[in-house]
Image (tube, rainbow, N blue to C red):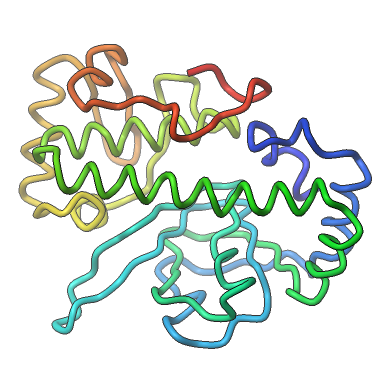
Length: 241
């Protein structure tokens, strides 16, 4: 099943098997998207909602010179463009970072599901509110934390989200993002990312090697980065904090 595994920890416990089956029934064929490809362009009409099954995606905005600011990173289990369900278009771009597999549900079918299944309506509403909570945390991170803490906070958030869907063991996880990607998410330069990653390693908190990230001292990294996972609203059926 496409949806059952990754809804775990995202209020999956509040859904019946019928709810999950309704999503499965309405989803179109699973699509494979190449890395670094556009899914939704800012301002274009959107008539489907896309559920990420495998891979990493991001939302971003470009300045007038084409410099990108990543405003969200999505992992398996996320609806990446659910905001467009009521808005009909997005004010930002959505693109893949890696090869991705996605399922898409037409908005007309979401109308039917939500009318017939109030629990599903609450889940989708929860998803958009969770995005808003993460956006507030990103504003805090970019506005109040220094470069070292920004990078540490970003790693903490991604590890927490990946743990929920079984893609982190609590310490080690794969993060196929370049230094440029990390820089664009943290509002610093790629050179600065390299320096800050080295400092985190020298402090014994975190180690990166290629696409592999290992948190060596979670308590210290949380404290340094002012990270509190409460804003992720991970349910009791998901991973422990």
